[in-house]
Length: 228
Ligand SMILES: *Cc1c(COP(=O)(O)O)cnc(C)c1O
Image (cartoon, rainbow, N blue to C red; front, side, top):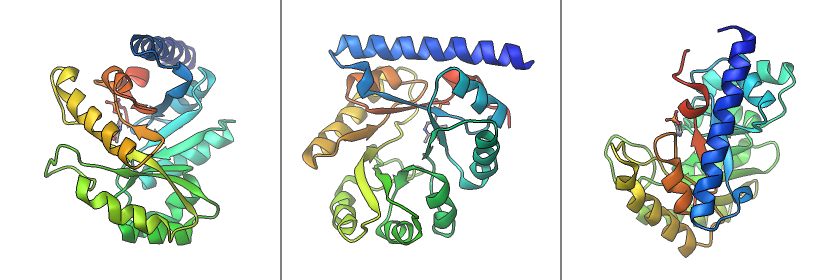
C-alpha cells in the first residue's frame, strides 16, 4: 500500500470507529470523553502506527514486549508521542523493558509480577489486573477470587497505581453473547471502586462501552488484518 493510501485508509477507519464509539455512548447516556480508544498495533508496522497518529490516535497497545520495543522506538523517531499500553501477557524476565517502554500495563496476573514491576518502574505506572471472567482454561488472567491478594500487594508497590480491571471476552459469533462477561467485570470493578475498565475489541467494543468500558482495545477495525 502506498503511504498516501495507507494514511487515507487509516484516517477513514479511525473516523468510523470513533463514530461507533460516540453512538454506543449516546445509547447509554455516556460522555464519549470517558472512553479511551487504545489502537492495537500488534502485527502492524511503525508506519501504520505513524498513520494512526496522524489520524489523531494517541493511545497505542501492543501485546508482546519484544515486538513492541523496536516499533515504539521507530515510531518515536517518526514524531509519534503517544501513551503506550501493554495488553498482552508479561513474562517476569521482561518487566524491566516493559516498565520503561509502557505507560499502562493491562495484564497484571500475579503478586510476583507486581513486585518485580514495582522495582523496575522508573516512575509510577498505571496497572490493571487481567481477569479471566469466563474461567477459560487457555486464557490468561486471574480468577475473581484472586483479586483481593493483588489489591493487598498494591499497598506494598508504591510505583504501581492500580487503576482497574481488564478482560478479554470469549470469541462469540454475536457480541450480545459476551455482554454478561462485561457486566460481571463492571460489577467487580464497582465492588473495589476501580475507575478503569479495559474491555472490548473489534468484535465487541460497542457492547463493552454500553457496559461501562473506559478503555477499548481495537486493532482490526482500525488497521485491517495484521501484516507482520
Ligand atoms: C489483539 C488484541 C486486541 C485487538 O484485537 P482486534 O480484534 O484486532 O480488535 C485487543 N486486546 C488484546 C489483549 C489483544 O491481544
